[in-house]
Amino acid sequence: MTKAKGSSLKWLLSGWLVASLVAGCGHRGAVKQGGRHPSPEKHVTETGNIEQRLRAEASRWQGTPHKMGGNDFRGVDCSGLVRKIYQDVFGIQVPRTAGRQAGLGVGVGKNELEPGDLVFFKPPGKKNHVGIYLGKGEFVHTSARRGVMISKMSLNYWKRYYWTARRIPLQKF
Image 1 (spheres, rainbow, N blue to C red):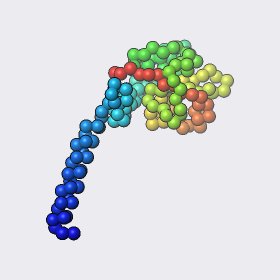
Image 2 (cartoon, one colour):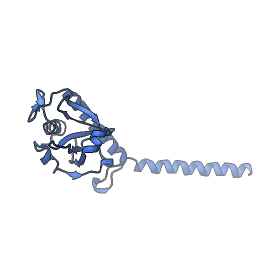
Image 3 (tube, rainbow, N blue to C red):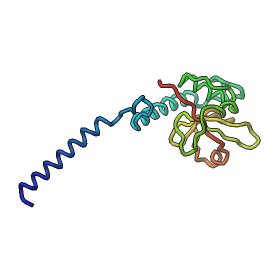
Image 4 (cartoon, one colour):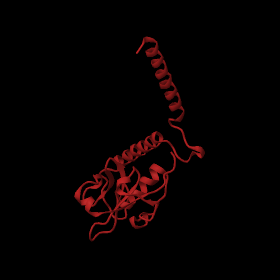
């Protein structure tokens, strides 16, 4: 290749690169007409913020003893914990019982869980159990023996008795 052709090719490629970068900047972070579909970058940021807020609230409750029908730091049951966290973190009122909470929002596949989703379990001989998915395969809930705690959904017990998950539309905060 001659020197003239080589420098023309470099000039052409660098022009294409600059044009591509400029065109890409206008699209990054954009919202579709009408604001209905935020970009993936925005969704990740919002999801991360939800996870941080939920984990902070879960740590405030961690170790609170289990108390059937309880709904404060002296003692709380699974649905009471969900109700209080949803109220305090999102300003959303949810029903008091796990059975009624299971009828909220929309169903979500186990592989599509996002922070804030409600996860439900049906252990044998017990009432339904509910917790809040935090992300990274973990959820906050109450244990009859250990009180409020964070558990991994990958544990055999939770895998065996997993029932369903529900997503409640969260308000912008």
